[in-house]
Figure (tube, rainbow, N blue to C red):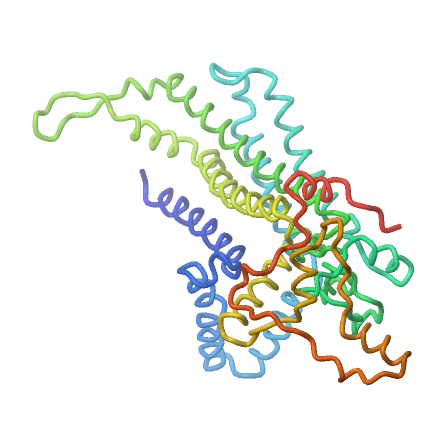
Length: 395
């Protein structure tokens, strides 16, 4: 196998690893481990080091101008990653049609694949467009009343407050997106790959996009694998032999060397097959992570909120909570559960009665672990999934 092909395969593997690092480096599961450390090294230490070197070489003015452009790409909505994704999908598809499509049907592939291939590509691109341009669940002054009724406040990670930007009440589980410049109901995260938020109204389309993408990747790599199997027999590569270095006898070349020869003969097709296999692994991991969050009734935004609360408890910043809040959290959803009355509501009520709001001293419950709190939004895997697939209308 020549050094150029090894280099190409190494670059593809490094690219897949780098994408995984950027996607999962900040997640609570990895932020304290090796993946999190590598993520901080790449995004903070390495970046700051490169900036210092660039200032020495180019000067502060040019680097400052570059920083403004970088700030635009990082902090403003733009279609750069959408274009990059389309380039990868269309580019790999063109190479496959150029180098591999004419080899279908074959000994290991039926003729129906000639129809299934364009359908799979169309499904991926169609779900990408649907996720990119669908409404994520924008909360506005016209639908905020409806949005407020979908989920109750848990008073642990979500409480009554007003969005300082939109100047409307923030529904439970919502988040203001600084890139989309709007509040999004049950906001999961802002995805730069679709240049859109993933939220209450379009998370189902985002999951469809992820599923169709990784299925296309593994389907494509399966096609390349079967094409190579057929070509090894057709070109009689499996009959090749080599001379043993010591016995000087002819021995059949190994299966590994047969595949290396195929990669040399069909380097374009082999590179595409390997790349989409590695990329499919990354997309599959992210899809599995998203499905796990959906089935457990939590969003990416809420994962970080729970993680921040966990850190605050472990650091002693949160030691106790109002007993009424704790009982509301523990009994939520039960038939005789009472509604938690917030501090603001109690003060307003006492103000109307002209009573001193400081006269009541609430009973407190000591908090030593995040496990003492329930996630009131987890209604069981089936109900959680149905709420994503069939979201309540905000119109």
